Length: 134
Image (cartoon, rainbow, N blue to C red):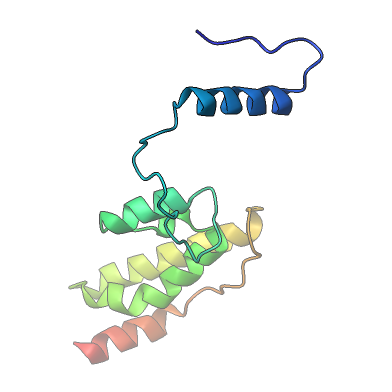
């Protein structure tokens, strides 16, 4: 049965009293991990860390967690590898034009996170590189 906080007692004090009473009753004895240090985490924590770790563990793409400006920059960085998988020049052009349209949309629409610094990609340069790599 849960005790109610007495009037005039701060919530913090009441919690401390509950913990002390549970310790005296031995309710914290023999808990798993008792006496062991907490696991080390050298990274600063964020509210999305648990989700990112889960996605990494399941070998999923975590770019959806990035702010739009960083996600677009990553797409531009990954573009050469992405287009190399394509078989037709039309598909390469379609991919680059879609990316450029999303970059232009990002400049027109306010987004959370760092400011966008990614510029549209030259379609002809990407197509030329794609041809040369084939």
